[in-house]
Image 1 (spheres, one colour):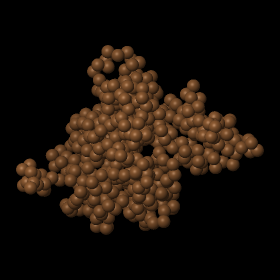
Image 2: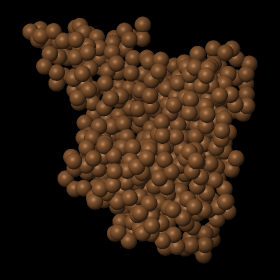
Image 3: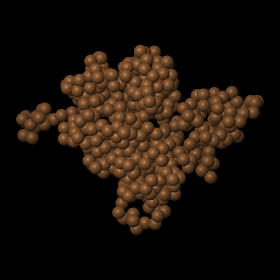
Image 4: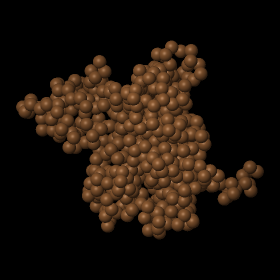
Length: 539
């Protein structure tokens, strides 16, 4: 016999709907249609127009046979079309695959093939990269070109984006997901050895992550969000949806140039922006002639290695309020935040900056955050000294890796997402990263696998052993430093020659910025002692 709180109290269309971030745009278009949703140079797009454009795209794609769980990839900078794709593709019930514009053609070609892209939207700025990537795939998707910086070189096998929209009807019905667990986005990680892994997001996860970001970052209808973070990173940490959920305005920016950023802040009264630590370094180092003053506070969320205190001091004086974040592609971007506490005002400047450098506590939409023993996954003491692995669980953890059950099982284990990052847990609940268990280097917000770079280095005919570690970098936070032990009978080789060799095999941001020659420290069993090398680069 059913309980009285279950009998006759059933879920139906009136009281249950699958969660989807598309609903944010429906609401904004209905109640805030006249407000400006997107600014791109002289272009202004209202919420009503944004919704109509997304509906026309979804209609046109459906008429061309694109629909449920088909993959639509996009290779674009921070443009209005990238924002539109985050709503129009989910309307179809299709899966959006934002591609990293900084990667090499072979890696992009792998993503297109592995993800089974049926459509590729290409921003004209990246037409050359797209062409080189498409030359490596066996099955060419439908290519849709977006004009940028003047014109897009239209060809018979490239459909113009605006022409595609003209094929659609903004009055055509769209269904959205039948199930909120339905796949929404496919994001390939850049921090792995071998082929990238494709993290799969759900409609439910994206909806909740967007609300978690909006709440944590204080977004509202008065918010003006500047796109200094690439939208291809974890779908812009879900901010394409979060800003719309709040009814704010998004300001597009193709390249993070300090002079342009200061100008846009002053012109549009920007209230929020996100990025890697390199962004703050760029702002701090900008010449006085570029620093247009602004009278309001700009909230700035930073993910990655904590900025040095000198940078924090400089940007705070300009009017930026900085919050440190931590997360991963697998967690839809930010999973933790370090918000400044009122009681910190009584601390010394040195201690306050040390607190700000922590990765903080869980976002309100994360079910649980812990630092666990990597062996038995039991929580470590909250003593600020015991090192363990950062673990999370909840609705804002990925569904898993596409077509990679082994990697999924290793990462989603015993009810936890295991990050591979090592941290301590402070008594106040804040976590603080101590090391990266997988030797991932975070340079300018990009993940670099040391093992991937080492594999390329050992292909050089003169290299016997290679080890790559993160070296502190005043601009990028960290950069790869290569330690090389050469073959005894090999001809001499210079650092410049090694860099030139890497340039032919690696994306630019993965190339070592420092090369050191000499015997590598090893254990009795021959394992390279990376901790010794790390100590050398931090001297």
